Structures are given as C-alpha cells and as structure tokens.
Image: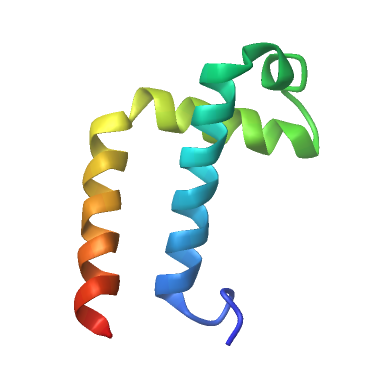
Length: 72
C-alpha cells in the first residue's frame, strides 16, 4: 500500500522527512541554507520545523513509535 493512501504511513514519512532534514541541517548547515526556495526549500522548511518545534516533534515520534509497536 502506498504512503499516500494510508494516513499512518503518510504521517510517518512526514515525520522522517522533518527529523532527517533537521539532522542534516545540524551537521551541514550550508547545504540547506543556500536553497530556501524551490524544491530544496521544502527540505529547508522541514529543517526549520524540526528545530523550532522539537518538543512537539519528539512527542510525535514517541506517539508514532507506540502506534506502530502496538498496532502489529
């Protein structure tokens, strides 16, 4: 099943995108800072969301982990 048709999978993909972009921006900030518009702008915006909303993203990670763990 595609992640587009399953809400839990779509949320997991978005969460992984935010966490990955935040980590890349933390390690190599020049990669994302030069590309704030266009397609690469999505990754820059995801990194900003991960940095500024980190407590909520952490709670979302815990919720998704519990959801995946107890659903199977």
